[in-house]
Amino acid sequence: MRLTIDDVRQRFQKHLGGEPGSVYASPGRINLIGEHTDYNGGFVFPGAVEQGMIAEIRPNGTRTIMAYSIDLKDYAEFSLDDPAGPKASHFRYIFGVAKEMEKLGVPVKGFDTAFAGDVPLGAGMSSSAALESCFAFAINDLFGDNKIGKMDLAKAGQSTEHNYLGVNCGIMDQFASVFGKKGNLMRLDCRSGEFEYFPWNPKGYKLVLINSCVKHELAGSPYNDRRNSCENVVKAIKAKHPEKKIETLREATWDELKEVSGDVSAEDIKRATFVLGEKDRVLAVCDALERGDYETVGQKMYETHYGLSKEYEVSCEELDFLNDIAKECSVTGSRIMGGGFGGCTINLVADELYDNFVKTAVAKFKDKSVKEPIVIDGVIGDGSRKLA
Image (tube, rainbow, N blue to C red; front, side, top):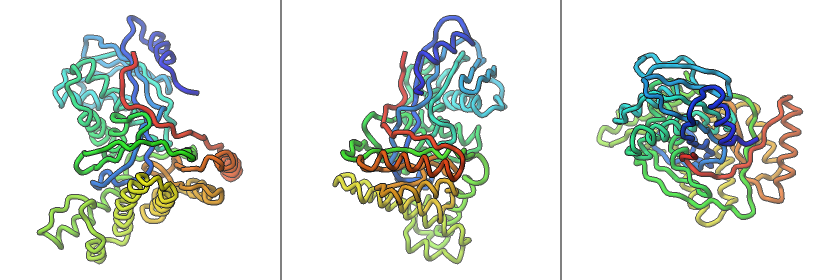
C-alpha cells in the first residue's frame, strides 16, 4: 500500500500537535547498472522511484529536534548542540544531515517532525538516502532560503553516512534521490559530478524488482573491506606509475591491474576486476540504450550479477537463486541491485513474459526459502520536492 501525505499529516498531528508544518518527499532509487563504481570514480545509471520518504516538519524556535518515526513507532528529542547526537540510526540520519547543513552555512534551528517511508527497508533501494535527501531538501527550504545547490544537498547526505553512520559510501544514492526526474534514468560520472538524463520508456519491456526480504546491513566491515581492496590496488598502481595521476580505479587500466597482481592480495585483484569490468559495462549499456538494443542491456545486467556474486562477493544464495529463475524464464536481464548482502534483484522483462516470470519467481522462491518475496514494479519518479 502506497504512503500518502495524509498518512503523515495525521500522525504528525497525533504525536506532535499544534499548527501544521510543511511536507517534503524524497524517493528511493533503482540502479540499472553500475554497482560499487561510485566510490571508485566510475559511472552509475540510476533513477528515482515512486516509493520514498515523506516528512512533515515544523520549526520550533529552539535548538532541539523532536522526531517521531511513524514506521518504527519511536520518538526522540535531541539537541543540535549535543556532539554525540541520538543513538538510534533512524534519528542519527536526521541529526547528521542537520549538522552537515550547518557546515554549508545554513542556520539550522530546532524543529518538530514526523516521517515515514514506503521504500522497503533492506531492499537495496536506498531508504536511508531517501531519508537524508528529504531532510536536506527541507532544511535548505525552511532555514536556508534554498541557497544550497542540489549536488551539495546530495553530498550532505553522503557525509552523514560517513560521519554519523560509519558507512563510507559513494554519492549515487543521494544523487538519484535529489536529482530524480520522472520517466528518466541518469548517467552520473562520479568523478566529475557531470550527469545527463536518459529518457526511459522501454517499449515492450518492464522493470520489476523481486525483493528477497533478506535484509542487509552495510555498516561495518563487509562494505568498507571491499572499498579498502579497491584502494589497495590504486596504491599499488601509483607505486608502479608515480608519473600517472590515479586517484581511483576509474583511472586504472586492465594492463595496470595485471602488473600489480603480485603486489596485492588475490582478493584485492578479484574486487578490482569486477570494478573495471563494471566501468566498461555501464558505457556499453548507454550505447545500447541509444540504439534501443535492450538485449545487450540485459546481457550486461547478467554479467554484472555474475561479477557481484563471484568477484565482488556481495550476493547471497537467495539472490543467486532469483537470478537463476530469471534465466529459466528467459528474462532479458537480471542482477542483484544495491550494495549487496541481501535485498532485490532488478529484472528487465519482455511484456509477454512478465506474468509468468513474476508468478514463477514468487512460487519457487517461497518454496525454497519459506519467505514470500515482494514484487515491486520499477516506475521511475521525481526527486526531492516540497509537497505542501
